[in-house]
Image (cartoon, rainbow, N blue to C red; front, side):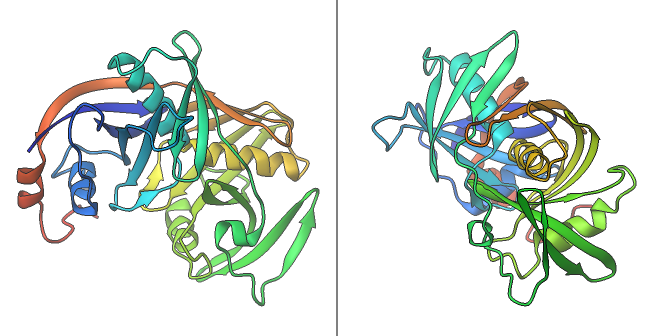
Length: 297
């Protein structure tokens, strides 16, 4: 079966985008993993699938599959690429658009000169909202936030802000994102057994009251060049801690994003770039995919 696809990225966070409106797409974990693999597939942090909506108030349904094949709730950088894809492919001229994701509806506004702005939806901060088991753990108040002390083997304890923006985030403040051991600490937090559905681990360095630097080790994808929901989670956590004021410029390794939060409405804006389009024989790709991970260490 031949699928048409478009390769896109938002601040370096890259995607394979599929039109499931005009072609039949049956996504499986095996197909998502094959597409996303950087040596044996096309290569992407996530696979984005655009479909006809189920919700009567939505223009489209927007689904996200991580590089490990798992379907997740939300992706801010992917949302920006989604709306740019819909307009460039002629699927709709509506602007703004309403998109249905696993946890509800989001609104997206495509401005070619200024980038894409996304209304990110509801923000929550309870341990249950991110699936975090706090039994026996210490916590401390920090401004309007509660920091949870998470022991990590071979690493210093992590002081975590918990933020749910459809998907779960754990954000910690670090002195220097370049020197912090993200490669070691990120996987320990992301897959820690206290997070029932794993978590996106954010490492935030405050530059000034309107600027941060950020690295994110994403659930099911590893460290990415940018994470839209991670940028929102870090900005919100910093505001609640009393360290930041809205709007916040978030400098990721792939480029800057802007997050505005007034305590209720959360909006993120940034670039969405089309790289190239192509076709893939998905069945052949899956058949030729190696039975074990051969990615070089």
